[in-house]
Length: 76
Image (tube, rainbow, N blue to C red; front, side):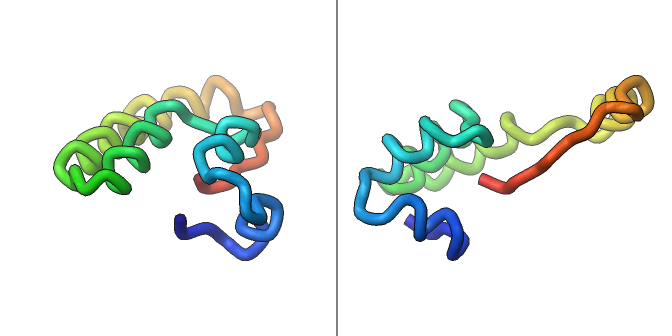
């Protein structure tokens, strides 16, 4: 499973999905997309990733209303 150096180091030889579920950046929609990709269903994986992405209009609305909140983002 492709991962950044830090994540790959913390995952070690554990099952990728088991490790991913324990991370603070876990997203079940992305997990389903990764599962579909590893099983060879690329079309389903792409549809699930599209579903997991925030819509541009929604992210602008949320960023204005939450401008004082502190976020720490990490890609999954």
